[in-house]
Image (cartoon, rainbow, N blue to C red; front, side, top):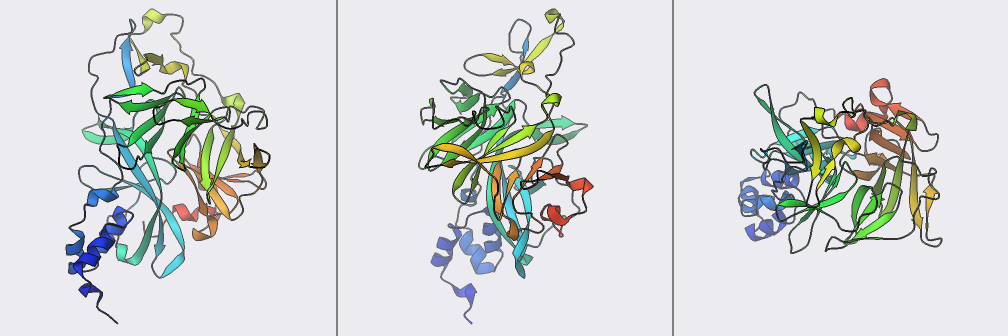
Length: 397
């Protein structure tokens, strides 16, 4: 057998710059001295795929006269998390799902709950990657901010944001699009948040498909966002045939090259706007929380609601012959994962315990649950002894 350590450095360098993630890059460097030396010439930042962007806050405080309270400053920043399929090198057929983001200063990984941005509790301080095969399968973005609590600095999701997306432009600057809690789409440009022109609806998701950017509104209508940030309706509506106009959350999910719409059904009896005990006396407010952009201020309290309870899901895909969205009764061998910051699909047999034809999600308790598409039942991770949640509990952590 040939000595892999004697491969030409030029060839090793070409391999290094073609690795798809920072995890694979670090594993490559750990093989031997010659491989580490060759990889040192590659720019590690190529694999981070997340530009270092600091923003002005989207949610700010204003006085009762509408003036922004002094102290508005940079702080929130763009954070990229990655979801990985991790298998034992000796048993690659099935694996676990882990999620992490990277500290911008130290470069260390933070392990996160797979379907949220909550830090994952674990006792493992170091992992020997030589024992595992790690493959990145999905990325997710959020705007985070650093706060100080009892002399400890902590990171948390910045207020005012519902969805965050990074649109990568080949040969150009990446574009950051966000959906605020008011359902409006904004983008970061010229050191401030700008509102996309022509919006006549509240939006729930954005997806990049075949080089084009699409948005999904709360009524199930798909819109196209141009490179100049104009928005126009694209394709038929599914408002007329889904859940009688459900006000639940709607998200895009791509599965094997096909784009689906997933409608989260909620218990509308629990959907209540927060009551403002001082609503009858506006002068009692010293300040208000608003979403601030180039157009003006939007009162946050108008859009704050108690987190509703999920009672089910419905899935739709486009029928090209009928030119309409039709309900899907089976996902086949696939499972959908509805995280707070991204949605994606997996082949169930590639993950320990993953149940095909099911949807994994989190509810208001930030606890992982599973919905079976065939019988409509919902199982909660903490209340179940079933193995269908095994992929979220790696044995090595």
